[in-house]
Amino acid sequence: MQDSNGNADRLARTLLPALAFPLLPMLCLAAPGGRQTSQTPKISVEVKTVTVYATVRGKHGHIVTNLTQNDFVLKQDGQAQAIQYFARESNLPLTLGLLVDTSFSQHNVLDTERQASESFLDQMLRESKDQAFLIHFDRQVELLQDLTSSRQKLQSALAELQTPQHQPRRQGGGGGWPPQEGGGWPGQGGPRGGWHKQGFRRPSTLLYDAVYLASHDEMKKQQGRKALIILSNGVDRGSQETLKQAIESAQRSDTIVYAILFKDDHPFRPRGGFGGWGTGRRSGGFPGRFPREQGPDGKKILERITHETGGQLFEVSKKLPINAIYAQIAEDLRNQYSLAYTPEPGPSAGYHKIELTTKRKGLTVQAREGYYAER
Image (cartoon, rainbow, N blue to C red; front, top):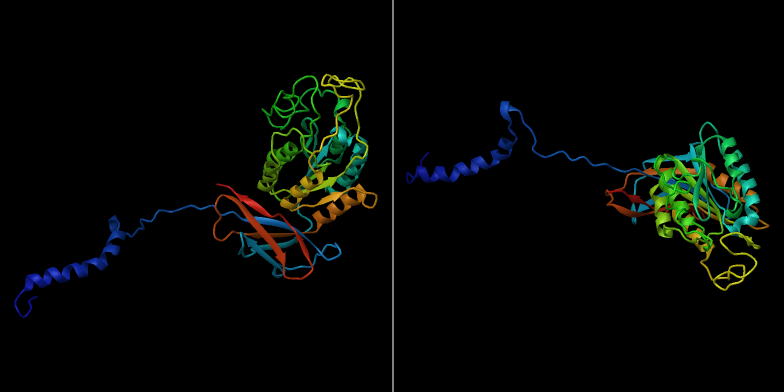
């Protein structure tokens, strides 16, 4: 090729690079043997589907069961999410954990709690589908019955509920927590409840430890609907875990927590023979009973645990006895909506806030407030 001035070499040097550059991407994809391959590495991303169980109530507290998927609005961290799965669940398998406070403050109400719990489990558990476990907590946390669908085993475990001064030393491996090998909990020389010094010690109520252990060691391994029911006055003394850690453990295991506040207006005061104190004066100069202290508000503590996990707090009274409370909890668990979504955009590790509402006015949605995305 030659221009009017006969400068062929200069024209060739100008055109050849322009013709070659568009071919470079295609040449880069060419593989030996004429096949084309992409050099972009494959990235495997695990997408978490988040499930939210919800109970909806009307203005007068009645449960609403006729809503559809289009009636709900779901947001994560303030951003609307597409609901990918929806069902009105009343028949899914259920895992229940019963956490009973057996500290001195509950001595006078323990028999009532035991009887009501037996009746509740009899009515709630379907032997072919549901399972439950029983934990008691005072100065130690003890798993009295691991997960089972047997009502008989659960009743036998409930019969063992006693406040510490009447509690016989358990023989063999029955007192270990957690139940798997190498647990090292009460009865096995472990730290949780077994670490206290001999002699006088302030009474302990390891509420936070009980919630943490039940969630982390039992519930986290289970799938589907999961709920803990706490029977306590809500006051914690001596736990290694904090309130925040207990709530986080329940949230990480996708567990709803209900609480039954059962105040004892006439707390039991043990006399004589326990840790060197009784009706006389003990070494610290106090009379034979503990001085009254301004402690934490147990009701507010239980309200926080239940609210942040999607459950509800009930307070026992003459108008609302414990049997009626158990009936309400059973109604809640039998009439839940199940909603699932895949977070968009993909969530970073840590806590993410969930907001579930309805488009219908006058309805209240009871559901968990958030979840933790794992690293």
